[in-house]
Length: 313
Figure (tube, rainbow, N blue to C red):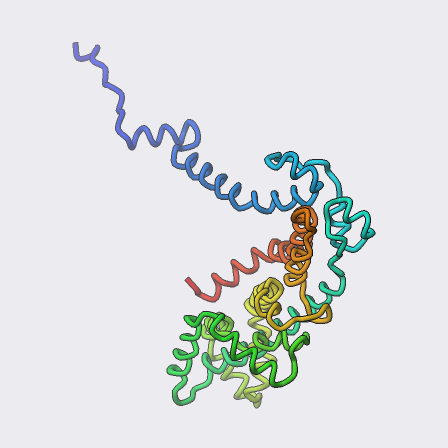
């Protein structure tokens, strides 16, 4: 009888889990992929809707506002943004007859973002090196106080900055737009300090024994070694400066100093009496955001790797 006795199959959760992994994808992995797909859809949908609206006509948007695909596909919204339509054509398409003067605003954005990035990265690197490597009385207390500025909302500094820029005569000037963020920021200093602290001191001591000065060590040894986090900080700073809106709006009064983000708001304010030029507005938004979106996509891996290498958790 014992020879005919059969053993019941093991149906414990652990055994079932192993069988699931052998036969196919686990339930947990399926749920994770579904969750990731939902996050991707929620993230990408606004960008797609901006593109769909920009490629539609204003009449088509009104007639079929829930359509997933562009309605009456055309590029006339972009033509209005670049000033390639006459006033009569723009009014016929539901626009205001105004254009963005795109190339002037693009030039202004590039100049301001470049000034902010170059100044902030350079001065923040020097401050971070001082906090990480140089020994001076009260260094840690000053650094703690400096980091406390991270808790101060930027809107609190708008009025003092505006008064300062006005007193030195830089209102409605590209330098005045860039000046408040051209120097050190707490995040930039903290970010670079974390990397500088991981550089072996023996390298600096060897250079100093060879007769190099502190300045030479900083420029010829430390900065080249920190090229990865510095380039990452430069990319983050450039994107932030490009997307800044409230401060440029506060100090820019004419086209000579308006940047693209402000130009989009000006384009919106010129809406026709019949309603908002949604096609032109979304085209202007896409034109203003696309350069930085492409830059971030190209540099995303470098940014993630550099943040991990600095030890920021």
